Length: 79
Image 1: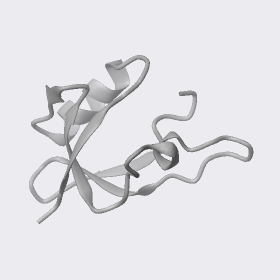
Image 2: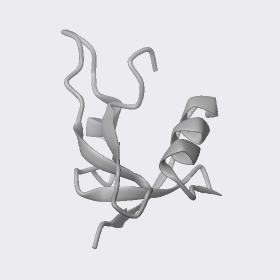
Image 3: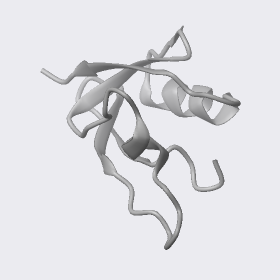
């Protein structure tokens, strides 16, 4: 969407994209991550986007930015 996918991502110790928090959105804008089923929560790493395996933080960002339509995330709890 116009304001992204609603996640504040940082590089994890393993080099992957770690969900630090759900972003605060501008007034009147719905955070897409807040509407996911099951819910997206901080503390998880993104391991795949739309079925494409993410090998690094940069790779994850690139895949998300190039995605169109519905974005499906595969998540794994950071150990």
